[in-house]
Image (cartoon, rainbow, N blue to C red):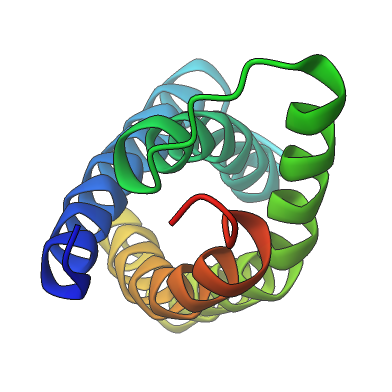
Amino acid sequence: MSRINLALRYIAGAVAATLINLATQWISFRLYRGMGELMIGIVAGTAVGLVSKYLMDKFWIFDDRSLGIAENLNSFSYYCLTGVVTTGIFWGTEAMFALIGEHESMRYLGAVIGLSIGYVAKFHFDYRFVFRAKS
């Protein structure tokens, strides 16, 4: 697969994962209002987004068809490790926008900006470190 096709697929996967993340947050904010609601929503969205994005990256973006438990645990561990930095970017940006504006739409704007920046970095991490042998 060409680098351009790989990048376009990754962008499509990032958009899908962003929508999944935001939908999960939206559901969380509808189910619970109170102390810590922002953090609960962010964590819920991140968890669901992480698993869905890993599966998209593994099978659709980087064409990794391995099904072995040990190999997948290793890949997922690296995937999570590389995601620590990008998750910090995402969470920090969303939290900053939530503090700047009182309206809920500011949370989502911050989330989209943070996820966009994070996914650019994550692509390079995944390409070089997580799925390097398969891509």
